[in-house]
Length: 263
Image (cartoon, rainbow, N blue to C red):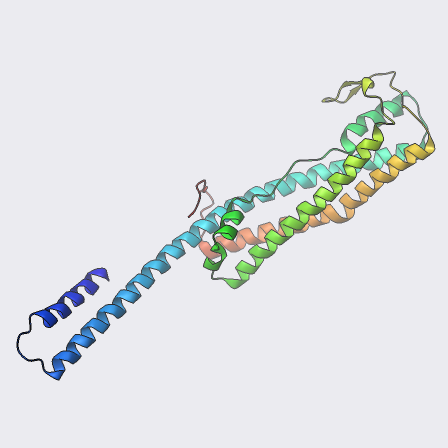
């Protein structure tokens, strides 16, 4: 296209500069048509070049997003496993606290459970591609409107999920603060393995104190079971759906990992 454009311009200029005889109106028309054609072809050539560049950039962004989503599915799976195990431990802990009947075995079990009931799994969904797309206005490159909407919705739901997870982390922090008046840290022989001394004792068996901790842990448990875990499951399905859409729309190569910034 550039060669054709240069040729037409050259010919047009030849007509304009090398013509020494008085011009006829047909020559003016010919010059005008040639110049118009040159400008038009140049415009279309540049437009096509930009379209190809943006199409390639769009494909790179979507390849990068595909990799982010694959990592997200792994993170979400880990979160489900961790929280499911934690809800089971919370159930057992609440039963022990409410019963408030203690022997050496039940006290040691409660101490071990205390290490797991108010802990959390550090996680963040991938933001590598989303940050670039948002900051660079890259979403305009996505021509498929349905796909664009689903990507935007996924990002919004990711933020919502993180916000609710932070809310539960705050509940866990308050439960841990309460636990310091019940558990004596000197009885932990090894917190990594959960080893507890045989002579472990509770700092208090006051029903009001134990019930308050049970209530706090129950709030955490209900939040995990009824809100966070169902939300994580739904978000996992969104990620899987987006992965399939990207594979179909962009013929994504699953063996290619994009590790460089896209400009």
